[in-house]
Length: 209
Image 1 (cartoon, rainbow, N blue to C red):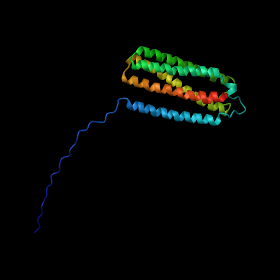
Image 2: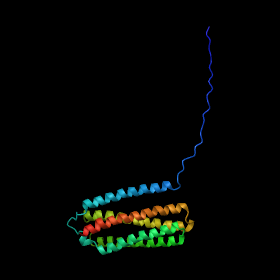
Image 3: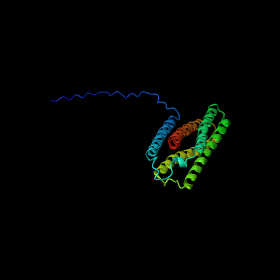
Image 4: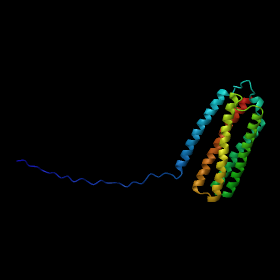
């Protein structure tokens, strides 16, 4: 005779503990993403500087820096960009103080200085091409136009971004999203200044020595 015993075990119900969700600062991912973008831009400019360093003396029996560059004009253009960085700083201070009108005035001054920088750079490129010193003339000029032209395109994009942000500020005011955009554009604009100091030193000053 077989005796079968059935043992019933009561399963304990699962217990779930409420935990407070991890708090992410609003806009934190925007700032992190923009820093990553700036680092990628640094790598791109590092490659362009390296290319110029290798090809910067390959003139192909053509004109070199001393025959092509007007250092006085380039110094004036450098002044435009450096002063624009200062005026952007004034715009940021006005934004933190909640003075939107003053901020817009300083942004407009920054924009004018940026456009003046672009105008001088376009004149320089046109003058070099008119002299027959276009990017196809030598490896030196190809590297020069690539490096300086890429920086100029960044200033152009920054100017377009600046106009867009001024319109957004005028419509929606100093909302948190706009202040974050201002902070990102400020980093971008100062980054362009740092790159240009490298261009002015490495390309123009050393080229004239």
